[in-house]
View 1 (tube, one colour):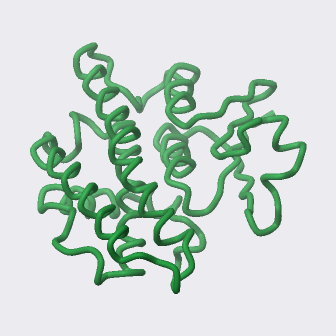
View 2: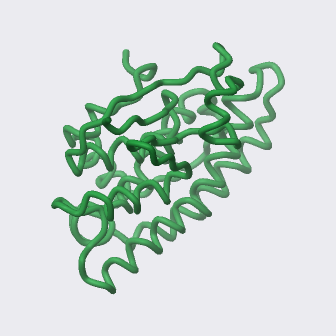
Length: 214
């Protein structure tokens, strides 16, 4: 029985898992859930994840949710190359730290923008609140500008890259909704160049959120 990924188009957390699966070459099928269709209220899905969120993977009889845990599981359960984390202990620790920072700080800032822009009707949006969200993201991303080591965030292409990129791709999409609230570009030149390199990767193109495609 193959691996199944429960996803939602545009979820940066589910996208991270899809990138990890593609990077490692693990065969999988995707079940895309819809808020509008009520898929998250389905008792069968709640049995997989009582928090009713994606991503969730089902690998044989094993069920796991929370994207960071899933990515670590995939690297350990399928240890063949390429790896998601470096074999060297210090480089691996750095990658894990970046994953944590992306989830905790960048993720929180992007979630604020999701709430104030995507989940708020246009006539009820507050330019002040949205602007504060962009300011918080800009401050956080300023700490990431000097992080990039070579082509990627930390050594070889890793889980750190797969964690940060979907969050920033979502931020770029939100930016186009209310551009007047953004102010100065929150993404500096080093991160912007890294995003271009990530965008060009075949695995990114293969996993691009379906409803984002023109």
